[in-house]
Amino acid sequence: MGKYPVIQQAKNGDPKPDYYVSGTPRATGPIYLQNSYVDASEVSYGALDGKLKSLGFNPGDYGLAIRPDQSLQSAFYFVDIGGNTFALGECSRKVGKSLGGSGRASHFNDNFPVSFIVFPESFEIDPREGTPAISDDQLKKALKPLLLDLSRADNANELPLLMAFNESLPAGRPQGKRKLDAFRKDPTSAQVRPSYHNIVGALRSWGYIYQPPFWPMM
Image (cartoon, rainbow, N blue to C red; front, top):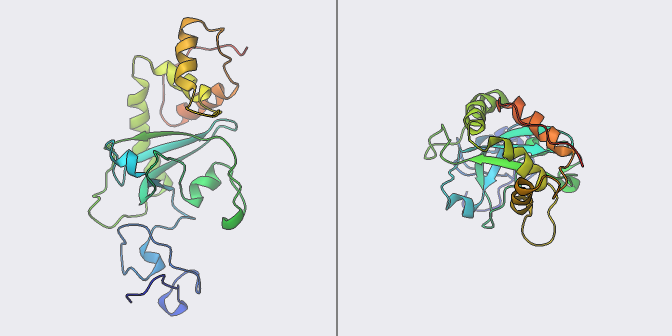
């Protein structure tokens, strides 16, 4: 060893011989074996951005990705390490496929809006140990109580509104909070996108049990 990148080899039982070993932090076995790392095609995980880490997020923390235009969702947890720009969209191929993405890795089609909810200090794995692969059933079991708690907030009915207003990102800063503030004062001030109802349905399927008010389309 001592030389990088490492090539997968059939004699080691690697799944894709002659391809590079693609690693994530905290291998569960020898660092030169692909199977020591979480499988991006089988496990729903994301990369933890450095600026999010500075806000109290840790490897192992949970999140939920929602595609509002089709009401598709995927849970995930932070395994890999990302950049330093408050980014949230760097996720495994499994997450992309669950949200409707398709194609080969080099031409993967993921050109659609996605909203993210992430939960700091929610991890149930020891970040000092090797990172285990968490199944979709385990993720759902972990996320449902978090979404239930979120739905108990006094302004819980505004979360799907905020997510819908933020669906399209114009040049500059996101406009969701500004549109929500205007909507509070005058419901005719901003159009409630049809995706609002998709978002409400997605949240309910993950444990958001409150009954939101109906906002008519304009």
